[in-house]
Image 1 (tube, helix red, strand yellow):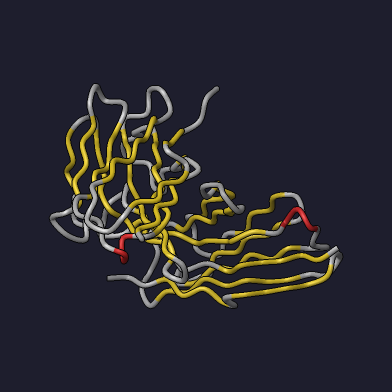
Image 2 (cartoon, one colour; image 1 turned 135 degrees about the horizontal axis):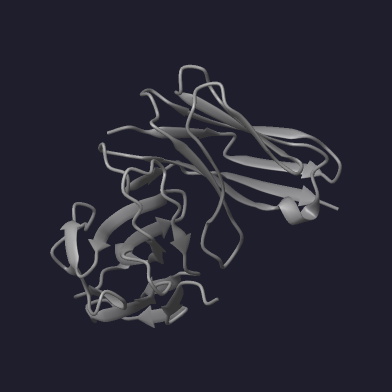
Length: 112
Length: 117
């Protein structure tokens, strides 16, 4: 079973700061998804990365997929209170294209 | 358009009672998933439906858990003889089936928070 390790588990920062969170696996990802979950809501997809070395940008969020496709990072520039939430990485598991295995997430709090 | 909806949003029950959790997926989505989210445990896959059939039930933790889907739409997750360790948020997701697409996006409902006293 592939395990996804996310770090840090908790992160509390001030508005305007930059941050990076990480997602690592001992095995190669076929693809990796990043989701954000706000309190009382379900996760919402932010991005899917497929190609090793791929970089995708979504406004102030930058997603990188490692060259070996075993790790990924999410960098947020000039964090805002609206970025507060649980950031989850997920990958298709068991050779399927439907079952997602999630990491435990990074709980980000951005203080005004 | 309407997203995935789940009911009830909160459920408090006594140990040993049965509960039913409902999921209404996005119209036209053929795939439906149930996950469980416990504090500190992340999201745990329970079961996957393609249409009305469940080709993967591997995540159901015990035979007290069952799920069905009718008309290729609404799904119900049933937990019999609930235990305190069943307390969690139960999330439902749906997705369109796109053959050969890697990393199919799943659309999640807001979840049902189950508390077993």
